Every structure is written in structure tokens, then in C-alpha cells.
Image (cartoon, rainbow, N blue to C red; front, top):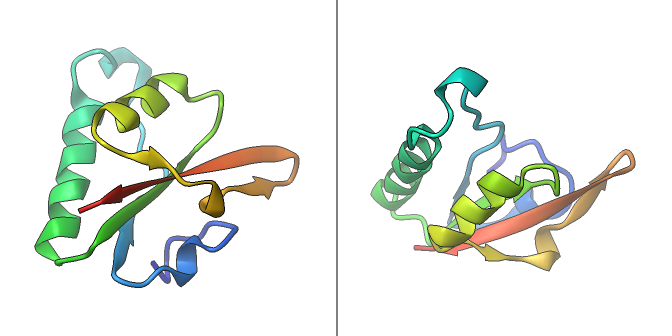
Length: 95
């Protein structure tokens, strides 16, 4: 988490993994690639025996937001922060 590079308290989390800026090209969307990438991140966090996986999203990323919730991530308001004028919302998956 020391290299996670977000605002807020996420970089202080212990026994945690995180990923940032996970994206799928517009032409490749709708094929489950985002879910595959996210599941690989979950697997890597579990392999490291971390207890949680932390991510952030914005309101404009509702498709990703819904996918994260379907994978078991829960909103974690303690991880929220403001980037300039943009609200950024934290999510946590306990492993």
C-alpha cells in the first residue's frame, strides 16, 4: 500500500493490497476483461495472505462500481477523499 498513491488513509492500511487505474480499452469492453483483471488482483492479494483489498472509484465509473460490488467489495466511507474537486469513493474487500 505504500505505493498505492491515493489521498485519504488508504496508504496507512496494514495487511492490505490495492490497485489503481485498472482500465479496459473502449473497444474491448463488455467481454469480462475488467472482471478477469479484478479477479487476478484478488488472487494476488490472497497469495500474499493480505486480509483486505482496497480500491477507489468515482461516480462516473458506475459500471466498474457495480462490478466491484458484485465481486463482494463494500463501500468504505473511511477511505473516501477529495481529489481537487472530485469526490473519490473507497471500497474494501475482506479476504
